[in-house]
Image (tube, rainbow, N blue to C red; front, side, top):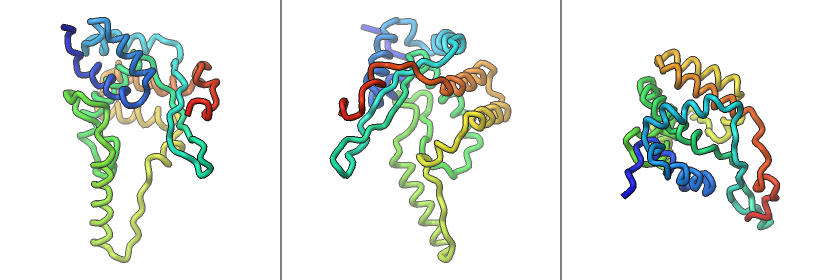
Length: 212
């Protein structure tokens, strides 16, 4: 019997199981190595692999999103990471979540990180957060019937974040929460990785209509 994957490896596998088949299969092959299933491997080896790689390497993948009015398919373009970076994602999110909960404002209703011991993806389901947001809106409306409630949809918010802003926000958060130097460097490295244009792949050369 193969040894059970520890928390970080399990999180990465569950995260990409429903997100991208190529990233999921790459992780499964990667985790065939017994040592790679342990949290210690992620914290030491995978972290150093990511830090020492000059630039990020991502697979350009298309995911079906919806049908347009004319019946043609619409796809969302995703750039999925290598297995080492996926494990580092799990490490960073779990580690940052422990600190983030100390200063949570109660004004964010989605992408609530899971506990490290939970053998699921990185974040809890979107729907409980959506219901919580609707309850908060209803409470605000009842408290001030003549006021206007404004909220920001995170989907529309993402494109407005520049790499420099993300880098500065991570630096400030890391300093406030005294996050370890290795994790600080990993966070900055992933932000820099996203600046590089991914290498052309077979899927990036295929038109969306060809892979519906």
